[in-house]
Amino acid sequence: MTDLSHPASLSAADQFVELRQQVESEFRSRFGRVPSVVAAAPGRVNLIGEHIDYNNGFVLPMAIERYVIVAAAPCSDSSQEHATFYSSDLHESKDIPISASYGPTCSGWGRYIEGVIAGFVSGSCDVPPLEAVIGSSVPSGGGLSSSAALEVATATMLEGIASHQIEPLEKALLCQHAEHAFAGMPCGIMDQFSSVFGMPGELMLLDCMSQEIQTVPFRDEEVSVLITNSNVKHELTGGEYAERRRQCESALEKLGLSSWRDVTLADLRLARSRLTDNELACGRHVVSEISRTVDAAKAFAKGQWASVGELMYSSHESLQKDFRVSCDELDALVRIACEIGLEGGVYGSRMTGGGFGGCIVTLVHSDCADAVRERILTQYENETGVQGSSFASRPALGAHLIKRNCNGNGTFT
Ligand code: GLA
Image 1: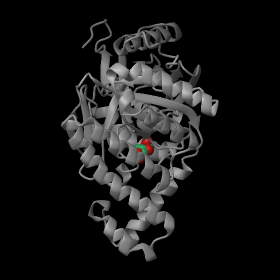
Image 2: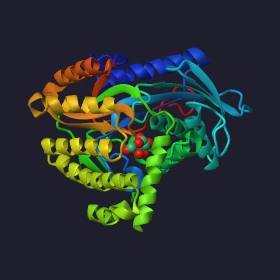
Image 3: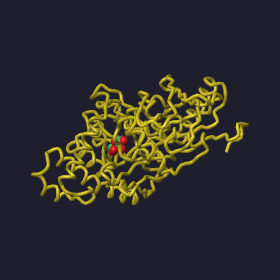
Image 4: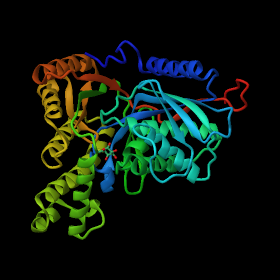
């Protein structure tokens, strides 16, 4: 079974056009005029380098062909002090204050938008009262950065509305700050960077210390990235994430070093009496995952798919046993992919994103992608009783304006 919200028969480009039309038509019927700005920002999948961004190592994500699209126009009543956002997926409307506040007054999805608006206002960018409609094809709660896509799409829309472009790096950091301060999620930089900087045909080897991106070409049509959603989410508060982050920080402090990049597995063994078991295990994951990520980027660039695959399996094992952020359903999905193996067209597989549910990412031979998807989903449902969903994606374009009508007379720039 494929992801039912987006039939496999629709190409990624058709899905995008369909979503854009839905959002624009919802805007017209709710607000009685055409939107002056339409912006899009993608979700992401991380190929390898998990829980490494906030440890200043390397990650290897790509933007995916799933987007949040926001259509907006300023209000006629310029004295209004809020922006109205309507979510066409949740059928819910929120009035979001336009102010430079430091923390959330809204709840739920409104917090991400409120954080981005506050970032613009406190950066001295005028945000006029506006009305907006949001639609999304990024599965929410699946570890594919639907919240980063919402933040970055909102920021890109605001750039269009305010006719004021901010540096892409600054935009990614502003959105990360919104997530920290307004959604209470102490995330790293990977999600917002992927959504801002995504490029078709390229993976991004992101150095989370220097914040520089080295592109890694991934254009071989014979190899596909399959994203399979377990459709379970065991951890909803973000508490486990913050806890892992704290364990990494305290381990590094006890090692007396300022960067995980300077730590070796031998250093960890020598320091074992000073570290708690959990700190030691987290450290083992971080040190080994940084080196796997660098190796995987090299193997990707050379088209050594089986080597990439082995690194993906090791990454999963490390996340399962040492970092302890996997769950039975993700382990089952990866095991099923591994059982299909090279003979069935699977190079490698691992959980992706924060963990405790969400998605796995599997590298497959494109000719086998449909058969692999079918077998994974059937066996997963037989074993767990849960219906998963799955789709393939090529590396996609990052945030962009689809439409901007500067002068209100229908001219697009
Ligand atoms: C979440 C966070 C990211 C990253 C991943 C784990 O998606 O938002 O910053 O830490 O988890 O790799």
